[in-house]
Image 1 (cartoon, rainbow, N blue to C red):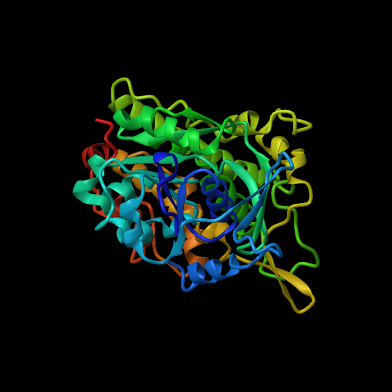
Image 2 (cartoon, rainbow, N blue to C red):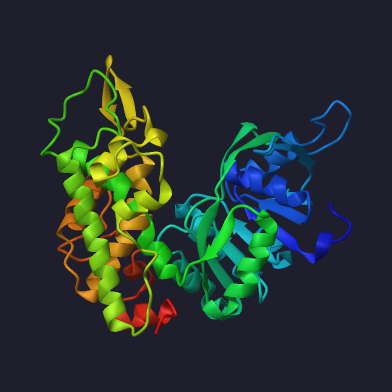
Length: 408
């Protein structure tokens, strides 16, 4: 345990996977840092892994930076006790988006006013979920939604060694309420260092609607495995995911992207001066994110087909009797539909924006997941509470949504 607070800041990192281990190791080198995992005995196992790791009897975790330098650090503690959140000035959630609500609920009794809570990434509707779980405390806190992780990273020896493979040059982040943005972003920039540069996005709704995973992953899965394209039989090899996008799948992706844009324009028409510029089309997102890595970026399909970052990546498949069948319960549907597409579809419903492509994709996904999100054209299925749809937290009008999102 740390005897005193380093540099006047206490950080709490949530999770035990790649990003959580990297963040914990990085921040612990400079600040009083704690790690928490609410998953089984993960925290205890991680704590044990860091004991006596080194031959010279130094305890801690080794982090190899993308500069080649190595840092060894030791967190103040690793725990599964949510009361630790009461010590934190900054809380970083580096857990899958489906777990965010569990952590918010656990922290609610203990979290102190002024705490910065950052989700990396936030996915869609993170600010709405946060406000609903933090109730009357929400206004005293700063919620920061990151569009993505700051690094490409992985642990190389669980709980003991991790590596940053690459650091992004820039990432977008939005703060709710906006009045806390300057302090929150400056603090997080200090934690991360010079890179990535944290660029302030005008609002968390822009981050939510920008979320490329809500379009790409469900859209490509539907485009390859819907009944119009697949006969249900096993395949002899794994098909390419991004580089296998055909005209049919491109049409699905463009349909989803266009419906997201329709939601953006409707919000902007209803809220004077509101800016959703960061919630760009999917094709524009590729132009922004992968410039120079695409041999031909003239269309969405070609941007995906010729992207060198995607070389050889295949659909999630399972081996069955010498062949391959699609894994239709993979996170591309199991996570990106409930914590992505369902948010946008739910908001579209409140705004009375038609979403025929979203409806097809969500219906396809929920059938294979054994869930019910969308029923009779409404986001009112039995499993709606597992989603980020506004309806999941009792929001049933655009006025209620704007109030909860603090945009009107």
